[in-house]
Length: 118
Length: 118
DNA sequence: CAATCATATGCCCATATCGGAATGCGTCAA
DNA sequence: TTGACGCATTCCGATATGGGCATATGATTG
Image (cartoon, rainbow over all chains, first blue to last red; front, side, top):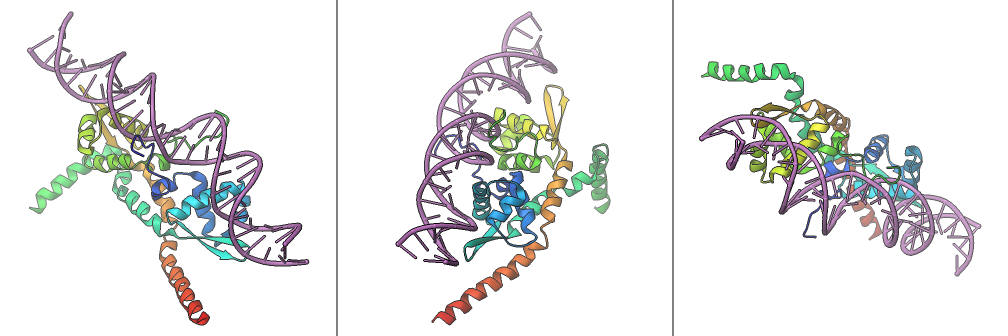
């Protein structure tokens, strides 16, 4: 508990939860609506325990919620947790629009603009 | 090599690279411009080797590029790799609005059910 | 209750990962 | 050339992770 944690717990950080490709696939699938575990496992070509484990991680970070439906347990999307991810990445938007060669000029432009504003 | 990989290599997947909070902090810092390793380490309260390791990961996924400047090595942002992240998360945009409504309806259902039970 | 279907958990293994400490290595200055 | 500086790399230890497999738990039906 005290020494060298390898990484922020995947169960407490959305960024970490979506670092797993299969978990991202699950989320994409769930955009089409609620699904039982077995169906998800089948469509994604993974075992049922595998799907359950991934779903557990997604549930613990709040990206998914589950609902009992008779014998089954339906998993549904709760995408609110993805909003911070979207916004964080969006904070870099202006940087991927400017090519590197232009970035320097861009910074110069900003400076110039500021000068002109004063 | 063949059996049970724990996770997609952090060095080959942007999602995985940004799963580390400190690496995200580095990227944020670099929006202000190029920085040498020691300065990054200092501002983020990590050791120099620690910073170097994180920078290596970021470099290998292409989120950062480096340039020699005399004794120093300046790291700069290359945010293009964050665009897929932004777009992927953006694919859920309509869902994190709808989620509220669904959740609300769900809560209403619960209340209604309880009332009927009493 | 017993049998059955759906899902969750526990265990084991191989590997990845992070942090710390020591060290290698290239570059600049005296 | 010899230090000193800046950074990268390597080794180590502790831990997290994902997959496979067996099994436990839950709920439904007969």
